[in-house]
Length: 167
Image 1 (cartoon, helix red, strand yellow):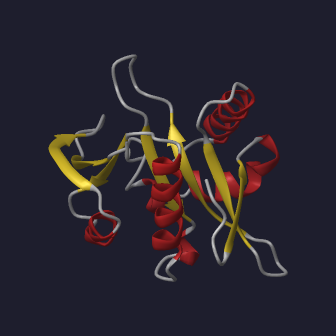
Image 2 (image 1 turned 60 degrees about the vertical axis):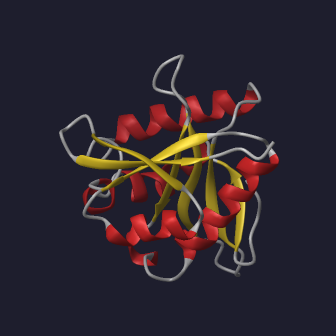
């Protein structure tokens, strides 16, 4: 992923446990992601370890979004999750810490993610809860195309969008 005006990006690894748990362990934020529930501490550790291994293997990964100001606060996570199956596309994720919502970081991270995906000539999907109108509007604003309706692992109604690669 590419740095933005306000955010630096760095591959997410075990050293980001506290920040990642603050996002992935938040039940309100994770209602919109994952399977509708927050990660446990062990799930966060496993996620970070797998992400670090994928980075070392040269695979697309998730990144920590760190404010460029003096405090260097990690405000979110963005990037690609591994495909759910050998025939599936990777799934993009943008997760912003709840106290940083409505400050434009989702749009900024999303623009960086889309630009990076296009530079790397990658296609992926991203899903959003049908009642999460803010995220749905963000995906449309970023130029993503709705491809289907579906349900998540817990029965949560989802809309799926695709980010197409540029040839």
